[in-house]
Image (cartoon, rainbow, N blue to C red):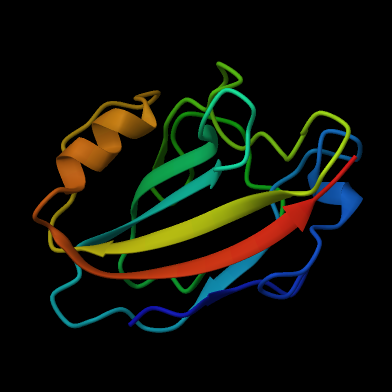
Length: 152
């Protein structure tokens, strides 16, 4: 079991404005425990299941080194990170993190899901969440989830 957490917000609690489109729109710091033996890479997907048009993807990162235990605050919005991890395209049409930006009204949930995989994904930078999910099928060893909320 992977446990995913953040020093910026607790599971089920509000995401600080700093990490949203109304703030600096930077990624929050994330930390996790040691993945299962046999983990070859990690992948992170952040999405909003409460979006008006259906699930909205905010961040896709894959091929995170298995020895990593964190993604620090403000990951650059570039295709390849210095660690070698790759970023996909979010539903804003951009590479990297796009913070919560729901329409005014009720709070939305933002699901940060970390996957431990038994392989490195053979995908190019800028791919969609759908391609990453497809490539992960049959290769997920464990997953961890952190849910934050945000309302405008």
